[in-house]
Image 1 (cartoon, rainbow, N blue to C red):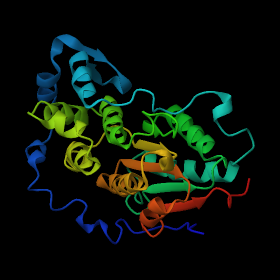
Image 2 (image 1 turned 120 degrees about the horizontal axis):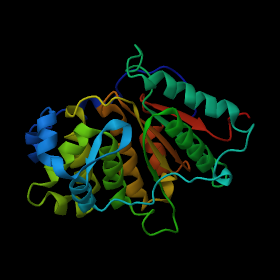
Image 3 (image 1 turned 30 degrees about the vertical axis):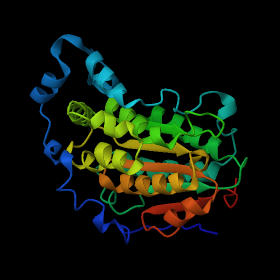
Image 4 (image 1 turned 45 degrees about the vertical axis):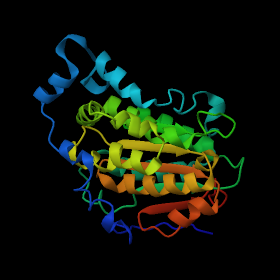
Length: 288
């Protein structure tokens, strides 16, 4: 069993190279601070409309972001039949909520020291998706920024690994103004959209996250990324790449945490089971 629960070091054994060696990448030119003037230039004063948390989001922005073809149905499921029944999974849910509450303010002294990714694993039908839906709905109600991808094996769109990162990028951009401007500016460059749409997962991650997120500034609120049923997305090789990059995503900035659920497939276990950044939890070992 892979379960562990401890305070961990800030970086994993292999993470020393996650935020270095970036200087030769073609998007290094986008590493800059985005001022309001830069935002207005990209967005355009005439087409702005208010969105989340008092920020602004233009129709032009939305059209540009949709060039990377995000899924618009990958969000968490609503409805009483999609969440944990009252009185069930109490300890597990409270553990996750406690972790997220400590992280929410982005000012806690131990925000850098705690684990960055929560991996809930278990067999099919064990209730992982109910936990993911419950936490996603709670996080939204609590005022966190939230991005989700709920995978589904029998859905061609929700089982496609090539649209996971474009979808997360689209959702984060809707809520984080600095990141939104950075992505829009990136997509204005020739061939970038085509490169993202080519479906190379490694390239998508580098372009949309690794080269941008550390340089767009702190948002006003912590951001939670929820990935459900990763084992239902693509081939094992795709799942392994996604798991590796999601682990890296969790440490790229101090304002993102990742919650991931899946079966304990070797493609995912090999990546997460021994990482110092990851809290592992067997849903079947969690007492009610």
